[in-house]
Image (cartoon, rainbow over all chains, first blue to last red; front, side, top):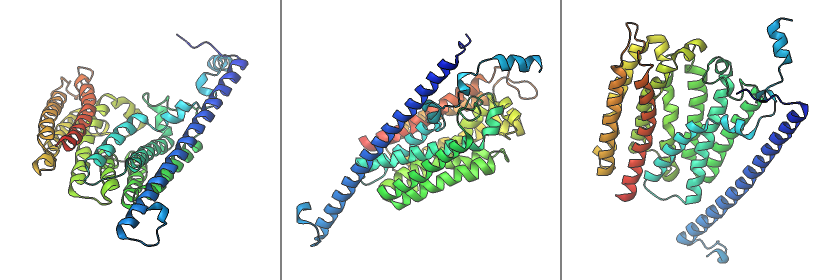
Length: 65
Length: 313
């Protein structure tokens, strides 16, 4: 079955809908990246703290021991 | 104005020509089906590697592999937009359909490729990032720009790009390359020709129209069927190497034998497909279509068995 032709209003509404969809997707991607980079930082920091503890590094912040 | 032109002028622009790409178009640019296979083999390489990687970093490594594969897909679609517009199978892709500007697709791909390598380097390790960069460069410059339009061996040599993920997954954990990931690389490498040539057999007209020298176009269907059989004969014993060298146990060994026997059977069916004197299939390439579908199941099941064997054993 052929698609029903869209008028100018229909086209505008479609464009706005698509733009909004892209903006929402971008927001989700950016928030997910923030969460991922935060998690990576925590993992890296805790890994370094553990390494320093094992090697007896005296310079490590006592609060991380 | 001709009658056709008048008709076209009177016809409202279809949704596809709205010049506002939907999110689905950008996702399509990443070739999600290809990405799923790449992610799977990359994850398998990561899971079977000796050592430990924090789950967050493991997730990051797999995400980087997925994003890099998607980026390659986007750059490939940008470069191949002229032939995509000619081929029936690809003419509805976002660039030839006019929903995404070629320049925007290229920028999207390059940004994702660079981002994936940088994050891999910062979060995981240098070896994995270097291998990821190498695989992107190989796919874009060697396969897409170098081989694809020049030689019927395009997917044989270019298949190396798709064989990198298990090695990258392994390197994410160990920070180095060993013999086992190279065997996994070889398995995907020898799996690629029977997989793609099975598709090329029944998409032959499309490739011929676009001037892509796939093996069936250049050497004919008969030779392609013979090559599918040969590569499958090489693939099956190769798939037994992880078991023969003691890296995996009985679960993988049995799976590799059973799956390989089935793949050989399908390759045999393709080779002995009813055909005319010129080699054209009289069964509408039904065995080749089935072999193509089975080749995907084969790779998923083989790597799944390898992971299961390592986790259980």
